[in-house]
Image 1 (cartoon, rainbow, N blue to C red):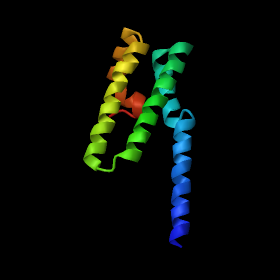
Image 2 (image 1 turned 135 degrees about the vertical axis):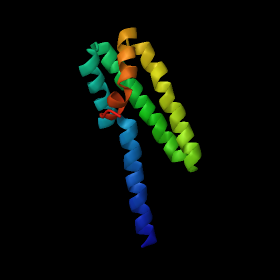
Image 3 (image 1 turned 180 degrees about the vertical axis):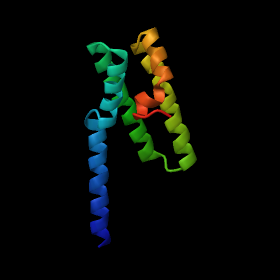
Image 4 (image 1 turned 90 degrees about the horizontal axis):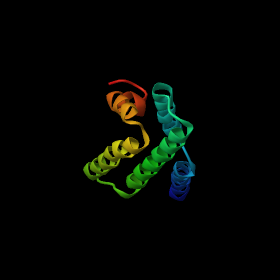
Length: 113
């Protein structure tokens, strides 16, 4: 019985890792769609932002798999997330970046405050 439970957990863990590594998630696509709708992004900006968002999601997934201490995990995830602004600043125009910063919670989470 324990062996069966172990196999089931392993299967679902592997499936989650494969999904995270295979491409954009619904969350990543949602971020880019909200940014595109509000900031009128070019196709190049859209694809670059999507790849950047996927890379951030993959980094966060790897950290979740390797760090078990809750405080250390929180700090590392914050470090990764804090890097998002610097990456986005290189992709967006200065005016679009200011709009992104003003509505960051909406763009990243789909809700305001």
